[in-house]
Amino acid sequence: MSHPLIGIVMGSDNDWPLLRAAAATLKQFGVPYEAKVLSAHRTPDEALDYASGAAERGLKVLIGAAGGAAHLAGVLAAKTQLPVLAVPMPSKHLQGLDSLLAMVQMPAGIPVATFAIGEAGAINAALFAVAMLALGDAKLAAKLDKFRRAQTEKVLAKKLTDLP
Ligand SMILES: Nc1c(C(=O)O)ncn1[C@@H]1O[C@H](COP(=O)(O)O)[C@@H](O)[C@H]1O
Image (cartoon, rainbow, N blue to C red; front, side, top):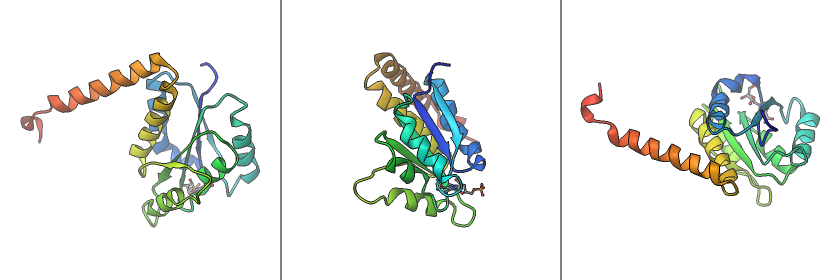
C-alpha cells in the first residue's frame, strides 16, 4: 500500500469494531490509511507527537474516534492544522451522547468536524475524507460519483413488496 493519506486514530481498541467501517470505506475507494490506538488521557505524549508529525508524514486528514470524555479529536486538532473529523463512540452509561457533546462543543479557534455516533459516523467521516481528497483528484471524484449513483439506484430499486 502506498503511504497513508488518512490517519484513523481511536481512543481504545474497543472502538475498532465500529471504526473498522471507516477503514473499509477508505479501502473501497483505494485511499491508503493507517489506524492507531492513541489516547489523550492514557497516552498523551504519543497522541500529541502523532498529531504534530502527521502533516510532515504526508497525512492529509485525521479521523479521531473516542467515547465518553472524548477529548482525543480536539487534542489532535490542537496540534495539527490538518482537518480532524471526530467520530463519537457509543459509551456504556450514556450511549455516546457524552462523546457527541464533548466533540461537538469545541471552543472557537480549534475546529473539529463532528459526525454521527457510531458506525454511521465512522462511514461518513471516511466518505467526507474521500470528498476532501477528491477536490484535488479527478479519479477519486469519479469514484465518489459512481458510489453515490449506485446508492441512489439501490434505493430507487427497492419495492414495498420486498419488505418483510
Ligand atoms: N475518550 C477516550 C480517550 C480520549 O479522549 O483521549 N481515550 C480513550 N477514550 C475512550 O474511552 C472509552 C473506553 O475505553 P476502554 O474500553 O479501553 O476502557 C473508549 O470509547 C475510548 O475511546
